[in-house]
Image (cartoon, rainbow over all chains, first blue to last red; front, side, top):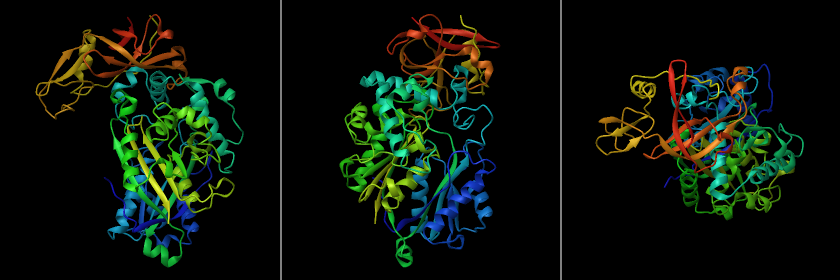
Length: 387
Length: 135
């Protein structure tokens, strides 16, 4: 079972504006997120000797951590780029930082991701521009598959078949997530959404409509970690990663197993077991929601309800603001912005520090963050705790 | 038959026999001579046991519809508007492997999970493509 020690802790968080940030490059956006995160814990770049990032999806760059380190004026003793998959990358960055700090490679590390995915993608592009990035094109393009949404359409149609779910279940999480976004000033979406508006939105890849899709956006997020001893010395607010587990099952959609064999269930079980808790102990969950169907499958797999029960669980009010386990309190990828899931982790840390303002979950102590890259190809679950 | 547009593959040495098979009207699946695994897509090593002793076997071209999506937007610019909506399918071949393909022919709009599907090659420029239709 994967274990995480608590010798290293998260002490700072950074987040840039989201939406369109024209004129900014990905390295500049990441630098802004790093500086914002350092300000949040009273540190400067002179305190940083570890740097971990993910390069931009829109324009893949080799050695991007080195690019960012030079831009920032750092000469770190630990520096790497990590690419695992949506939000699992961010969790893995935290795990790498914890290992690097515990083993003495560095004392204070920043984990960061950000890019100009919206203003930087080619004109006329739909969704993330992932062409030739994920492999498998030879078995996808000749059949007309490009990008992510058509794969999730295939998954959603099968979910409907397996569980008798329908578009009202997709709409339920879209509406719940929008309610959270309205409490976050840094969200792209500013207006309430009704189930009727969801059902009337344009069909993209059946059964997924426009309002089932996340928001491609510019922006960035960052987290600062240091040793627990150093954190206590400088009087920082501390959050620790209590557990983290991942599971990879496939990459391309033709190799995708049946829904109940996707890796989220196993990753979740490992993460709960390592933390010694269950879903009933959580104060909130930040679930990777690139599409509405992603959140439904994740809610089922992480034991919030029986398989196929996500729609009813959401309609019970559990995931909404003030619910028993609010989901995506920042508005998620669906209604805040898709920043690779980095802001799911930033939001969990912000809530656990008690700094979430008008959307603060009262007395928040335990948060679950889930991620998946590709088409649930790699799944990850981490549990974060206020120290 | 619809007027099909397709992005043609760039076969590698290991995948050329698959695409050449398509041009002869055969859907070739990889088979492992050590563990008898039948798999798609072709690879240099058996994904079940790691063996390099691999062969080819022609599929009977029958399968069941695992899932489908009607694609309503073009990801390839205005020239693909003529294709919309087109239908992507995951087919569970009777030999075992799951395969992504495109559904063509009559009744496409009423496709249902579990429908029996039949292989139907569609020629585009220099390549016959292994698409499916409802049986």
